[in-house]
Length: 272
Image 1 (tube, one colour):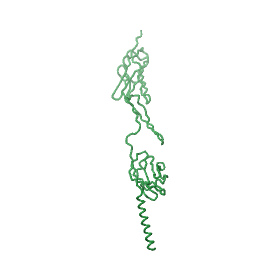
Image 2 (tube, helix red, strand yellow):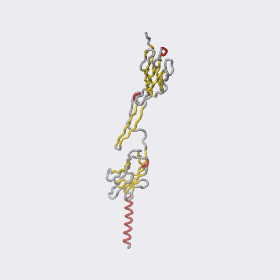
Image 3 (tube, one colour):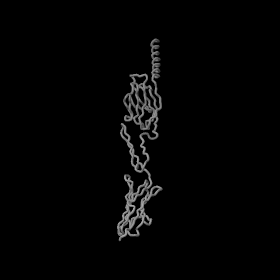
Image 4 (tube, one colour):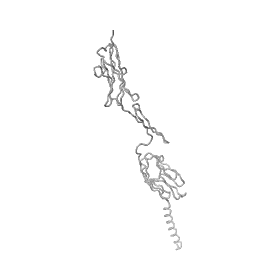
């Protein structure tokens, strides 16, 4: 090889190296840390300046696994998407962020030049965001199951919240005075409400708690979630009731650190 050819060849090599350095420094690199919210969408930018139609763009993770090429997704198909908002942009969308997406992502040209280097950190949502249900001057009848429903393009989710309103016991007898003839069957009833309701019972005219026995029959219909009233029925059996059974019969309702009661005055009719 002659001196002239060698000189020309060296000049070409120098010019090639120089041009490569110019190309290497020509692209503007995006270098950033991106906070992505857990279970939400996150987008990572990639932009080529100046733009070249002859170069395709690829996204990689920190393990150098190819995630996308051009407009095609090659990994995590259900959770990644490529969009081109402009002719020289390739935005990578993580559709639903979970903790495995905390990584470093690189957007590169097909000939190896980095356009973006983005470190993703996961940020959980603090507090509760969304609509708030406010119940003012709350009363006992607000006790119920409330359902919060959220809907978007991905579907519907719902969460049920049970609200219980505490209140002091209330006791109501069906009849506050009764006059009966000796030997009759006597039926007394009462309704008890409280939240929480710890106990409900009758006491007789001597102040003793009533239980079912040879003289008394006691029935109880307990409250339910949809009907928060407990009914108590006290029966003095027929052919047993006499003058000695006259007096006050009391229905009791016991709540948390509180008690309420209501009285039935029972009298025997004089038979002339």
